[in-house]
Length: 55
Image (cartoon, rainbow, N blue to C red; front, side):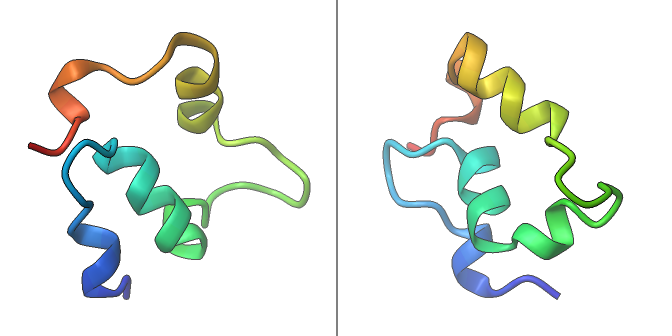
């Protein structure tokens, strides 16, 4: 189970990216070895949607 830190991003951070960074194993459990996470790649390419930024 992910830690409390993974579920509580600081102000101004993307909640999805924060969770994927701090609960990486839980967030990426379905991925194979050396396989990129589609959600992470989408954020790297297109940026972070406003509704995911912690306020």
